[in-house]
Image (cartoon, rainbow, N blue to C red; front, side):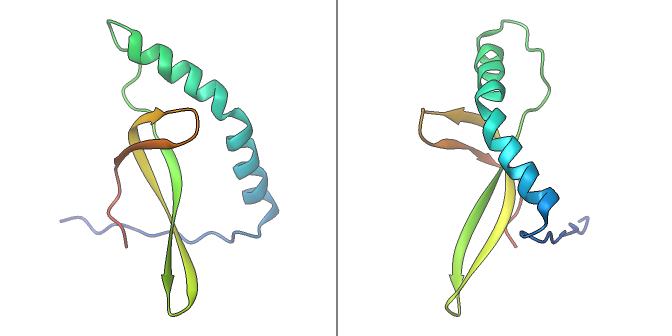
Length: 88
């Protein structure tokens, strides 16, 4: 079995914060395109994923792990799909 590499990112890095904000601001366009894709007879996309933050309390500290989901759906409030990664 291939070993999965884990990458750590500084959540306070200005470029990461800018990337988070841009992703959140443009999600409506991503969702519009994906919802149209789900209606196509002949699919145009091989894969479309969203990275989500999963939080857990460990020793009174909040630990965040970001993982990818595919088969993305959105109900107007919540984003959900199938987890692609194995949690660490």
